[in-house]
Image 1 (cartoon, rainbow, N blue to C red):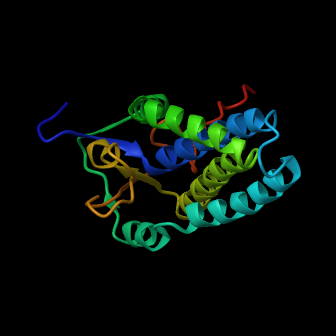
Image 2: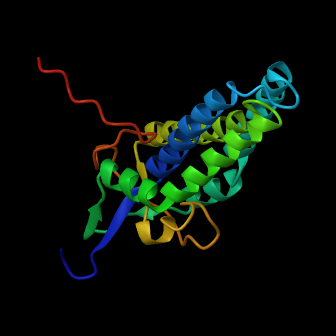
Length: 192
């Protein structure tokens, strides 16, 4: 690495990873919750959980939307000496930092089924769906502008790539790194 080198990780990969982790944690907790009759009964728990799912999905999608738009508008081209993190590295780092938080969220959502079966799990799954939708939104911007959005991992690893103290996002061309627009795995070209 050259002098002044720094690493970058994809914004959409962080967002998509958070969404996927919450989605599956929530679904697992909801599945466990369905085995418990709960105080309200399964029907009320599921209907309440469906409402919570929609509210959480909308809240997660809209949270920091203005901040994201501002960071996109102010983004600058990445410098010459950047080291781009692979998608797997970003996913692994995100999950490693939050594994205990996810376990606690699963236990809390499953325990809440004693009151309202599956509701807590559907709340978590809704938050995951909203974050996944936000990754799709970022991916549409990336495709439309033929640029990929990146953030320095030391700024984003603590909580979110769009939190207040993140100093800015950077851009590269659309073929940089190994993740497609939106943070999904890049499909290998089909051999002709």
